[in-house]
Image (cartoon, rainbow, N blue to C red; front, side, top):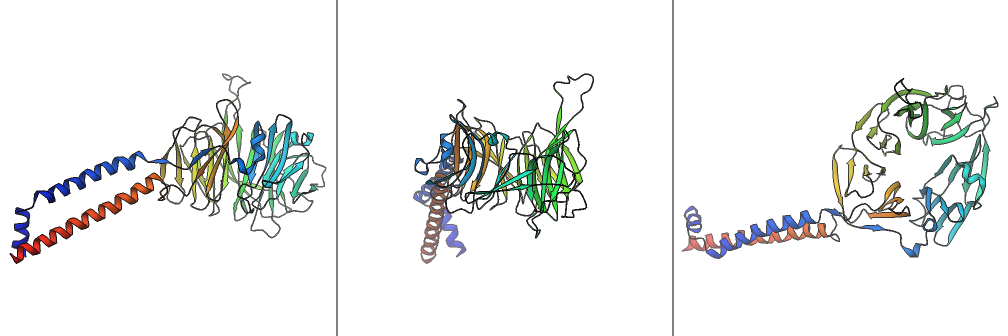
Length: 413
């Protein structure tokens, strides 16, 4: 057998060497083709006209929340500025559009809180001490009274989903500052934490174990060399603990400072943590710790199914950054064409990632990305990968078979 292989190598035909050479040429060409199709596919600017989405009529989209558990994938509630004025509405299918408040109602201008859940419930606040809830066409209103006659605006709200009473942490504005109040769903609200004049809290999410993550901005006191008209600021992230005890105010148990001018995105993660993004940094936060990375962005979208975040840059960016939260790995994804919008908000609904923003003319628009296409056979990259593997296996198998047949023939000879 050994002598047979030796003869085979000595008497290798030119046709076999030609086949091997063609195989290597195929590898090189295939590598270039795969590299040339590394851009994300499935990007679409604009919306499907058949969906008749109300925000398409607007000049600027102020607020939007999609309802993930609705029967229609585009179901959402929003506040939009149109040529006729402000419109606050809910659209559960193309023909099911309801005004939450009447168009141009002065109360829309006073909205300090706007949030929609997965099923279509919208929570908002238009006046002091008031939380309103919109459910299936009806609005219910709660007046929050702490028995001290306090007056406060409500700028943020997060719900402890593990609590039987659905304990809520409120971000309030009062006495010229910003603070927290706890609310167990009844009319009594705990006395807020001491107001911090230098910190303005902007948003909050529930994490786990009665712990919330609040984010805001700390205004640094001007030094003699600084202009009082342009004080510097820092990002603030704080773990806030409140377990529903009405005799105890929410407590800031851990606080850290960051960089950047604002936290533009905040989301709870599937493991009871949170992610936050500023124009200069990206944070992965757990109940006990926080990691910070120097990733710049203008908008972030968290994808719960795969526990990862998508970071978008300025209009004209040619790539986006994807961060796998479990492993910490990052991957830069080239876009099929430069980002045509300046992102303002984003969301993932089903298999689609949506980015809202405005174009170079200041017109509002939406960009969608089909998350199922990347790597699938329906994409150019996926098809080339599949073809490369199949052709490679066929060529290697054929060469192996011919070499084996040649060896056996040589041995018999």
